[in-house]
Image (cartoon, rainbow, N blue to C red; front, side):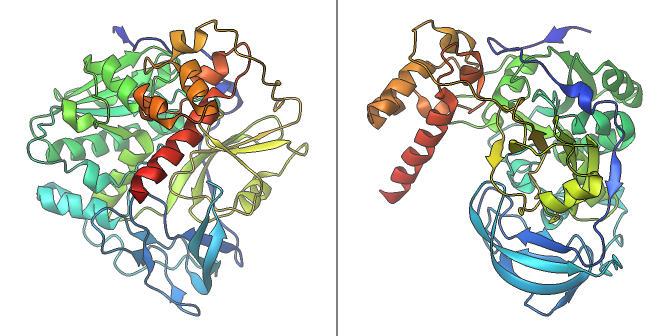
Length: 442
C-alpha cells in the first residue's frame, strides 16, 4: 500500500497514547440535569425554536428548524421539560439563543423514530431528505450541513467521495476508535453516500499511525470494488480538506473554491456514522463521540455523549480533574478554542475537550520575527504568514488580501514552527473575520 501526502506541513507530537487504547464509553446524563441546546450548531442560518417554555419534549423530537435553505434542524437529546429559552454561552465564546431542557431520566423516544429503515429502496431524494431531517452537519468541526454538501450543483461532476480518517490533530482519537469498533457501520455509511453519486468511487484515507484501523477497514470493504483504503502520511494538517484532496487525488482546490470544483466530496468519520444511523436506522443526530484528554483529567478517554450536556457535567461524570486545569480547549490543540467557562454545552461540532495543567499549558513569550522563513517553508497553503502578520500589524487589509490571507486554513502550523513564537495564526484568524465582516457591510 503506497503512502500519500501533501507538500509542506509539520510533525508535532501526536499525544494520542492518552486515549487511543480507550474503547468508546457511553455516558448518559443523569435525571434532573439541564441540557442546553443552542439554536445554531452549523454553518448557515440559525434555527428557530419549535417548542416553548413548559413543553414536554421527547428523545429525538425536532425542537428547532429553519425555513432557510442553508441550515440544519436540531433535535432533543433527552426527554424532559423545557425550562427556558434564552441566550447562552457556546464553545466559540459567543452567546446563542438556546433551548434548556431538564432531563427526566426516562429517555422516552418520539414515536417517529426508527419507523422507516428500508433504505435499500430509497431514492436519491429520499436519502438526502433523511440526512437533512436528521440534522447532520460536518462533525469534524466545520459544521457544514451535510445534505447540502452531498447535493452540489449538477454541473459539478463528483467522481470521488473521500472518507477523511486522518485525524491529524494531536490528542484526538475518536475517529480511530470508531474505525475499529464500528467498522462495518462506517463502510455501510460510505456505501449509502456512493448511492447518491453512482459515478463516484469511495476512498478511505487513514494515517499510518492507525494500522489496526487500516486492517479493519480493508477487511470490511473486501468485495466492494468501489471502495479503496489508502494510507496517508502521519503529518499535520493531513486531515484538512484541501490537503487531503491533494494527497489522495493530486488535485488542487482553487482559491475560494470548494472540493466539488475538483470532483470531490470529503466527509468526516463520525459524520458518515451519523448518516448510517439516519438512513439505515431512522435516528437523528442526538449524540457525538468526544475525546477527553490532557494531563489535568483523571479519566481520559473517548465518550459517546448526548448533545447539550455541559463541559462541567461531562467532566464530573468521567471522574473530574486530578489537578486544577490552567487551560481548557474545545477541540484540538492546533485549531481548538480556549474556553473561559465550563458552563458551555457539547454541541454537534465538539470533537474534543482538552484540559491542561499550568506546566503543560505554558505559552512562551512572543518575540520579534527573525525572518527565518520557517512559517513559509511549512505553511500547507503555500502562504507567507510573516508577511500577513506584518500587514495586520500595519492595519493594511488591502495587502492582507493581496497576499491571499483569506486562503489561510487556520491550521496553526506557522505559530507552532515559529522560533520567535509569533502569534501568527491567531492574528490571521482575527484579520480574516474582520475582513469578512467588512465585506458583509458593503
